[in-house]
Image (cartoon, one colour):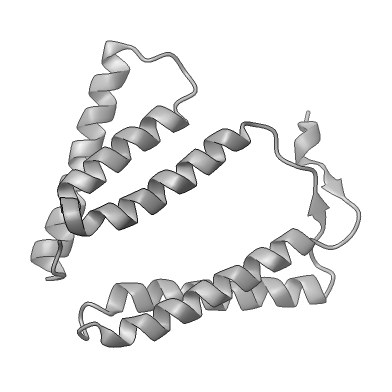
Length: 152
């Protein structure tokens, strides 16, 4: 039985169209600012920028063709959604002064605290810390030693 918040609402997805315009603008800005990067350093931002622009345009075409529909507002905490966005923004600004590993570890810990809906147990905390260490260590190794991206 579907939840009521998953039901479609009559009309086109205007919110999705606005989100697509924002994605296109962000992708365009990323392309513009990545011109200052080295050729290898610009690969990742330009790839993400191209995806943002391409998928934004595709969704706008779908909206224009009437292939989308609105939806009811999602259930859940708007405070959590805002907190997640603020932590990610804070992480971006903390990269240079704190470095990649420290700022990423702090952001990961905060994101897990905000996103977790269940009671914390020692086993859950240990698993979360271990998963975070593997992911952050893997990303650090990938960027630093494989892609040769200079990290702060």
